[in-house]
Amino acid sequence: MLGKPLIAAILLLAALRTLFAAVYELGGGRGYEHVAGWLALAIFVVAIYGGLAFLLEDALGRRVLPVCGAGGSREAVEGDLSEQLTRVGDEAGVRHTL
Image 1 (cartoon, helix red, strand yellow):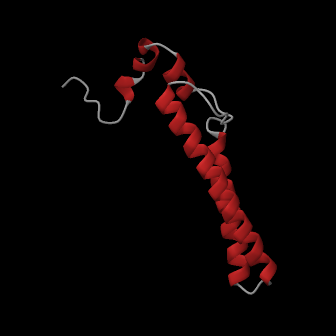
Image 2 (tube, helix red, strand yellow):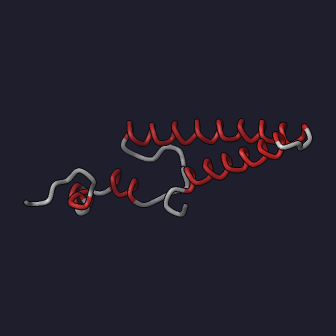
Image 3 (tube, one colour):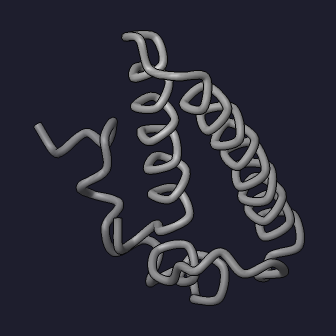
């Protein structure tokens, strides 16, 4: 959650939307359905913003839109190759010496 706050915000909004939709389905008033719908719209907006921000960052090689996160992606974009290769041996699919 601290490393990727934009993704965490999307997941939190999705959980809240599911909760409101479940309350509506279990007999809650129509207000719960409306709140779930507005939360779905918020999820859409935040997801489009995040996708656009990550796409522009990948295409241009620098951060264009703020996404409230720093860490691995910033190192990958702004750092040199040696910083990126330090953890390659622990990645999935990398075969260790037999």
